[in-house]
Image (cartoon, rainbow over all chains, first blue to last red; front, side):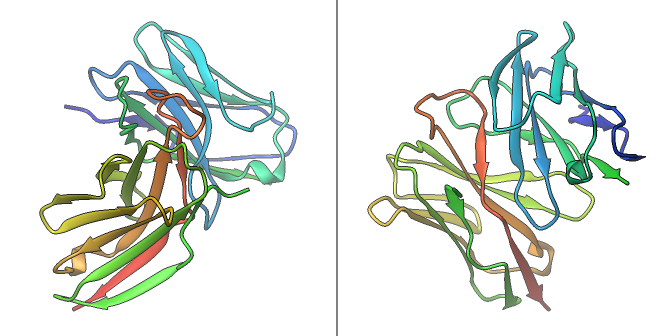
Length: 113
Length: 116
């Protein structure tokens, strides 16, 4: 049973460029959330997708956008990259659950130069 | 405004002893609290959770205690093992009054080192 898979694992971009990160959820999961983890910090919620719609969003600018496909996989897009966007981007999948338990992928390490 | 705080960046414990990791929160609307463990180059892994209506939850060597009046929770690991060495994150959900959203608010993490 494959867990949450993310691609690419590492990437380097320059300021002003755009990036797309991809995520396949754990088998049977229909909800995908994205988190940004800066160095030395805990993960910060970006947004969550369910039934191909953005259901909730954290305090991130519109440069951060996403998409969920009919097979529940998801993409995170970041436009006009800034140096401060350098971070580990984590994808998490879940079923609708009151406990909030999430299953995380290994993350995509983005470096913006 | 950091709603979930882990004030100890690191903790070192001898193998076989108890490890106690602490977490404080400010939002009284949180209804679930979770602990995640993270090894280098891996994503966070769920460890244990507790509902706000309970004050203790136990799973093997791991016990989480919740003190709502103090807005404080702690994770106890007994006995500690070298394989427990990792970064531990405290997280909370439901702070915006809604449940089932999967939006977790994380603390900054505590790095636990268990020495053989």
